[in-house]
Image 1: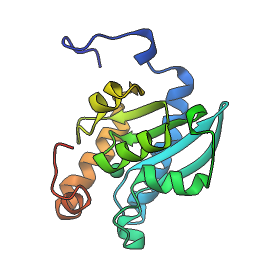
Image 2: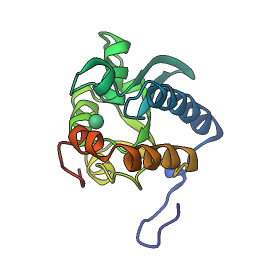
Image 3: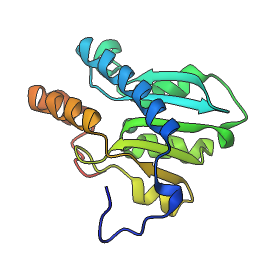
Length: 164
Ligand SMILES: [Zn+2]
């Protein structure tokens, strides 16, 4: 988790609570995997409580925009307090979800892993979002298992963009 090129600050280090909420996002990812879907899960947390849960439902609902993060945003309903909400996601956000995070003004994102997909952590940080990378072994292992089993579905999901 500690890279030589990245400067780490205390804010970048996951708290015990972060790890617990990430486990809940992982449960969503696991449920998705068991449904035959792409195993990416997310939860939104406000004041130490989970207010919404979501998971990638591309396969389950035939909906290309239902990524873990966007499904979670949909579950959260219409809100005016995104700036006070932390988003937990098992996988580093794609450009669509990164856009949604910025669009709604979410200021803190906890990411399970960026090994299977680099996503847009640096871009989010540049835009002022606090991003905490947990580098979680379970998140990595579930995602890599799915990619190995169904590379076709995975590449459709990320629209062929392996880097963003
Ligand atoms: Zn996404």
